[in-house]
Length: 187
Image (cartoon, rainbow, N blue to C red; front, top):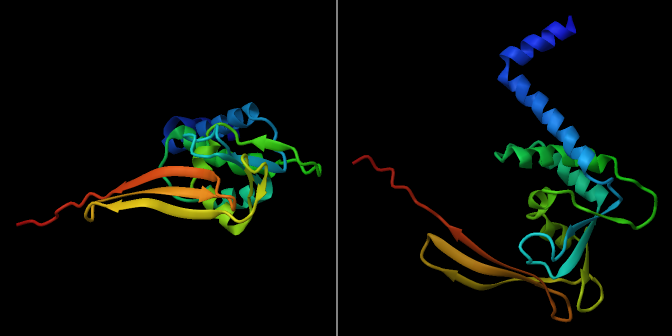
C-alpha cells in the first residue's frame, strides 16, 4: 500500500518530487564530504576572494548551533546552496569528538553560507584567529571601517579592515551598497 501511495505522490505532487530530489542530493553531498572533526577552518586566504590574511577556526558545536537556526530561515537561493544549507546540520551533527585538535576544512559551498557570520564569531570570542605575521593566536582584533564615502542617499562604499594588536592586516574587503528608489506615484 505504501508503494502505491508513494507512486501517486511522485506522479502528481511537484512538491513531493522536489523533496525527494533534495533528500537524494543531500545524501550525495554528505557522501562526498570528509568527516567533520570538532574544529573547523572557517576562513583562510584560500577562501572567498583572498580577503583573509589569517586563519580562523571555530568549534563544530558553535557552527552546529548556528546552522540549526540557519536551516529554517526563509531564504531564496540556488538549488546547490540549498543542498549545502540543509546538509550542514547533518554533517556537523556527526562531528568526531576524539579530544584531538584536528581541523577540518569547510565542505564545498559552505563558506558562502557562513561568510557573513565570521565577524560575529570573532567578536564574541567563539573563533580562534591565527595571525600569519605574528605566528600566534590573537585575541584583541580591531575591526574598523575605512574609506567610507557616500554619494547621496543611493550609494555608499567602505573598506572593512581587521588588524591584530601589532597592526598586521588580518582581513580587508571593499564593500558597496546601492539603493534603488522606485517612484510609485500614480499621477
